[in-house]
Image 1 (cartoon, rainbow, N blue to C red):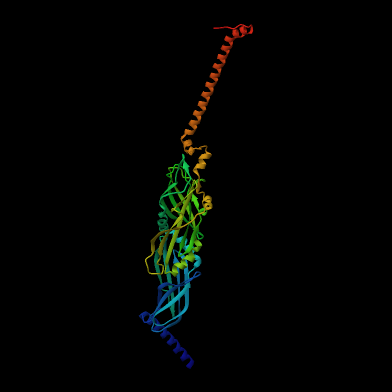
Image 2: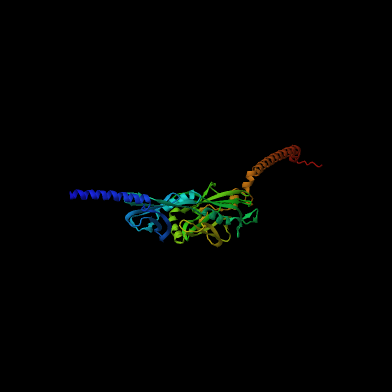
Length: 435
């Protein structure tokens, strides 16, 4: 009887206890803790890793602490590229507000994929951070979550475009032995426009397309210029190209620009996308700030005279400041810090390999014009052919006149012989004729 009574009392107590807990939840006295995302910020950074510190809050409405029944997790995406994830399990919380710091590493290996997605979306990236807290108290549980969303935008293509537009202008060569029709001349090139845009982008290479509109004001052809330079982000080399490594699109084998013509030339420079993680670490370490420098020089050789753009064997270097606001509260964008000139030497071999040399005098001599006249142009106008035909006609007329003259002489000789036969006979018999 005693054992049955004890069992009966225990069941009643459990039932009443369950009803009491349920009633307290229903009355709002007890509840499932709430939680979510508080903040994100960068933590430790080096060349091999970037740590993200995420603050999670847990609000426990109960008058008592909850031990070991709270789990938290979060994910970070940049332009739908998974960049980081972390989790903490078996968190104990006290009554009221609680905050936890979760640290994880950014997925370095995914940064090139983000760069591709960022450029393909016109240099705009959506930033999404999702945080979820899993909590349970007795028979009750919940998984509240919050999402932090933002958008970052860069303008690197416009910065490159603005930098390379500094090449626009008129440039002339010096110290030349080039002569046309016996007159010494200096080769001149007019760069009317330079534009830059991104080409094909992969996780290995990023193409930079620089298009020049070139006018040739000379009376002879000029070659397509050679293009050399470099691009750095926070002094990290992103692209470093020699002239003979640059592809020129849609150009004939000789690459010559005819006299008086205006033509476009598109130069394709390759940037190493695998350098993006190295650069991004420096960008984060500098509070999401980057100093971008682009350096370039165009050059050609005409008739032994080297012509560089800018002039005097110099290159132009333009500097831009780039800021983002992924986890730093600041304005993002690109600001122009100006351009400077610095010495830059492109070797003769490099220009030869880039097919940026041309000798108009040599071409004219090969075409049979020893006087330095543009025989190619004459051929195009049909003047040389007409002249040749006239020469042939003059030769034929001269031959005919010579033949006719020879015939007249023969007739005169025959006449003289006929008249002189008698004189010959008389002289043979010792008589002379006096007239």
